Image 1 (spheres, one colour):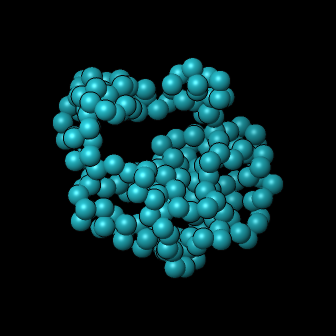
Image 2: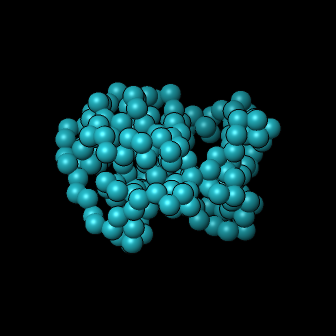
Image 3: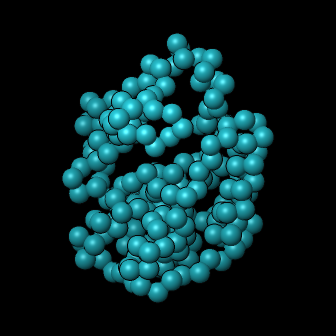
Length: 205
């Protein structure tokens, strides 16, 4: 699921890839990796995990990815400022639809710039297609399942310590799900925004 800056630079001109900048349009407009289209995934989330809510999410996601031009034969690469949650959200969404070739840029555009790799400022338009995928229901859990199995699950809360402890409220309620463990997502990363190696992550988890 991870692609290095070196590898991405070597395939940047391939017609078979769709490179997606998940930052805000304001950030994208300043500069971005050549050929990238912009899809601000911060605004794209779904809070209704009822059966109807999931069906609505599926339809909306299929429409969104059709607009972007994603098809099963394309290699899809998401990137963020660093190896961040927006790029990870894009990868997860395509994994949920069982896309065969999706990854995120390790270190994001921050590392890309540190290596003085090419940038551009012109916007790139979408080339719409018909997106379809097979739902992988194994990687999503609804409220009822979690609520009914609290004593049997290991629940990982990837938010900040302050959100976990209820000092900062960015959700409907303060605090966390009972029995959840807190590992802030940014603890997965090195100072340069790239992922820690397997040994370090194994110790963390």
